[in-house]
Length: 463
Image 1 (cartoon, rainbow, N blue to C red):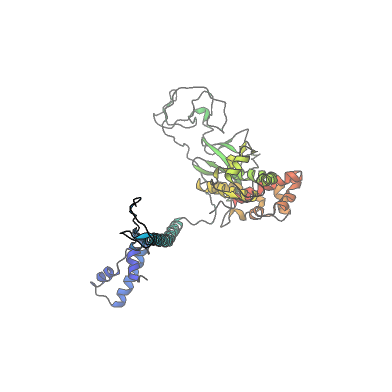
Image 2 (image 1 turned 90 degrees about the vertical axis):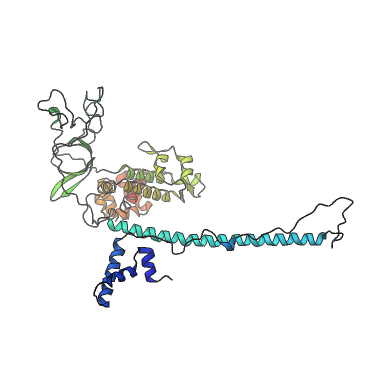
């Protein structure tokens, strides 16, 4: 086993001999040197670049694994009518017995070399396993270092945000004009007669006809000055969950109470914004990330088609490829096909039944949301603003935005009062609880599959 000084030098690039040699130049007692040396070592271990080297290096070659076989059997052709061949040999010929014994010896030598090859392969496999274990440990150390750099947060706290009067966009080459559809804040085509895709609210170009416009400075057309007001939220008549804030497209995430004021949380290209609710008729439904809704659709489809899937594959396990081949073009709701819903799964994914399928989809969609940096918005949209170390799955079903008020009341009455309980609930019991608000037993089963699928994904939004 390596001694402590060797470990410090090879792993942390710390040479204790150099440290003590430096301390010897000062008038210090041995105790003082020891204390200072310990402090220096600890500081360097925690601050200098850490180096990695294998504790058990793998040699590039091994002499013990070299082949030793050398053929001993050599046959000289016989001539008909001239050579006399016998068992023991005669007239210069070694005979059949000697020849066959040499063949035996060659076969034994080959067998020995083959056995040695398998032995060497086994040792190589063992060495590789050891090296991979070392790499795994080092990767875990790196992961720990990275994790320690992440800011510690006990939940989601969003301070009020007020946009400046003008949000400046880069200069734009306006190009030729062409007609554009009527005003709709949901899309990029905003106002009739303007060019596409210019944002008509604020753009730093010089526009003829304006008074006091400086080339390159922000310019706001008087007709849209009210829309540009950062304190105003403009919503679409068709969908109150989309709108414009400070000239930017915004998506309504949820509503809640912040600092004693009832507010709405909106997602914009510049981040999330809290706005006070001053108008009546606010949208009752929160924002459900489409990837969460995708999991819910797969959950509902799986409940409705569990027997069909089982019969199609004879009750055996099935893969993603099998599902795409047999059911890929099936519409699972909202114009989405099952093949599109399976896109986030690995090609070799395999499932014992539809329950495992929904679980796999939930994990894949939650991972996609986290990797896209949308986990916070998706969590808030699903279970509302929460403060403290409260994970989304611990939230009450009373704030679960994916469920209707009637569904939430039915779940609470059945004792399913948290998102985690919803995700782990018995499908049959869940279907019974939701049959009344859904209007029928079959509709209750579909609602149960959808809500349970979304709950599974929501519970995995925080790694």
